[in-house]
Amino acid sequence: MVLGLVVAVAGVVLPAGTSQAHAYLAASSPADGDSVERAPDRLRLDFSEHVQLASTRITLVDQEGHATILGNLELESGTPEPGPDAAPDEAATAGPGAGAEDTESPVSVVAPLPDLRQGAYHVAWETLSSDDLHRTAGVLAFGVGDTVDAVGLSETAPEGTEVLGRWAVLAGLALALGSLVVSTLLLSSVGDERARTRLRRRLTRLRRAGAAGAALAALALLIVELSRSGTEALSTPYAVKWAARTAGLVLLALPGAGPVAADRRPRARGTSSVDTVVLGLGVVLACVGTVLLGHVGARGGPTWYLAATLHLASGAAWAGAVTLLAGTATRRRPLRLGGGDLGSLLRAFRWPAAGLVTVVGVTGVLLASDVVGSVDAALVTVYGRVLLLKSGLVAVALLLALWTTLALRTRPAARSATRIAVEATVAVGVLGLAAALASGQPALQPELVSSGPTASTIVDRHVADLQETLTLRPNRPGASIAFVDVLDTRRPSIGPVLGVTVTVGRGRPVEASRVDGTRWAAPVTLPATGTTPVRVDVRRRGVDPVSADHTWVVGRAGAVRPILVSTAPVAGSLRASGAVLLVLAGLGWWFALQRRRARSSAEPLLVVESVREEGVQA
Image 1 (tube, one colour):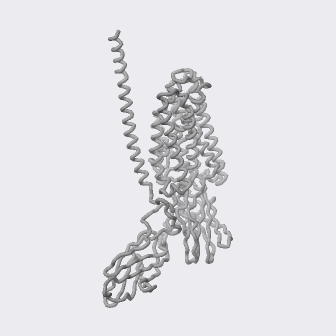
Image 2 (tube, rainbow, N blue to C red):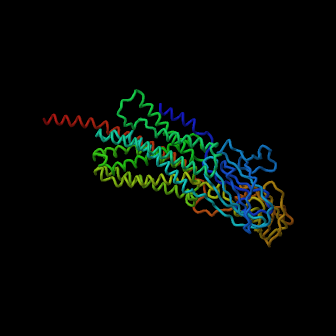
Image 3 (cartoon, rainbow, N blue to C red):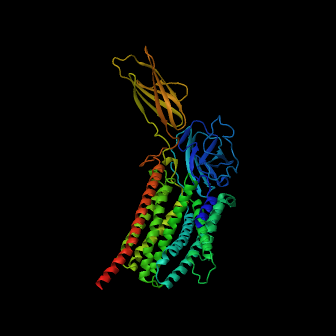
């Protein structure tokens, strides 16, 4: 019944489209570092998803320091720049409310530019994502008839108040989920009934306090975010997601009994089932709502939402349970809990902890494939470094947990209290880093992820009896110069080179001019980034022209960031790694359960043999 309720609620709450939960600048025209011959009449900023036009501010600064705030901003749906022959519906421009029906689709902000003179210009922009009200900002530079240096990679650092608010929400949710795990799965191992009752009551209070605290933190965070965006954000899907999470937290904070009940009064038949359903619904709404207000992946879809929800729920439940067990171990005497019962409680957590950590690990690798674009993105961005640090802390916590598990086999449980407290501290740190990740900008900047074949630098090949070398500079979309070096390898030579023509794509042949004895140069126009054919024709006296077709890869417009390790996309590798981990985890759990079942079936046989031996001796 509870499982069916969870599936039904997830189907209603989870959207079917894609979700990224952070708008970032995917491209611009002019691009960062571009040098254009003619002054553009408008600026176009392409974002990965919808932004709040009313909260968008664009400032143009010339080389003399004069700042102009651009007005009459408009939104255009989709990111591609429509060509001059595009149909009206393909280049439709929307007004201030454009795209409001889909806050997760790409959108472009277009701003008319004043008359620009020759020189360098900087553009500072700032906006809010419509999906989660996250602030994003950046700076780019371009030149009109002049070369400029690109500003380069820009990353919006998370604000301290937002990180603190999200950490408080996650900490409260972890306390509530951890209380459910301990009371439902572990308390039965405590033999002292009075101690078990005291712990159950305490866990009930902590579950309600954690959920209530998380709800209050969510409300404070909403007030902070509305102070930046205005009340119009309440009419966006953000309000629905926030309401879903708050409703779940309220259900978790209700005094209903459920599996953590401490009420001694007799309950009507069916009350326990109702309370369990209420708590289950609260867990689903709280986790799904929190996921939708954070990072869910660029593709979205049911699989991604399910993986993100399981990751959050398992991680929060593990952190909360570890923290509660650490508190129980350090306060064993005030709680009047015997050393044997404490050991039973800690040992009972081994299997639930292993299951929760398995889910966190598998789903974490899968979700990382959509928030980190490359190895360089993980190394040079704040988001990537925080993610690596979080992964390192999780590994430390796992080592501490393994150490504690081995120690409990030979030592009293009370002597493991310090290690458990350290593990709980690490778990709280993991929640803080998770809050920073949910508040930050994913490491998916186009500068850090190669989106196609590597740009060509030089083509050198043997054609007939000639050795040709071709290079195009600056190798960006737009005006460029084709340099062709022609060397005659035949001896004696047939005759001198009379002329060279260069044809790019389907364009017209361009006659090259001689630069020196063997080098020729021709002004050409390169198309958009990607592969394009380049044809070189060499004319000599008394023989037919020699033609050669070359394949050239046009580089990306704007700044080209030096590669630190690799900018190759890692999404496919991470998804494959997640699938391998899933298979290995399944096999590991099957083996562990089979071994445990074999031990359980062998224990009665050992008891029978012991009884028989005692009878024979008697």
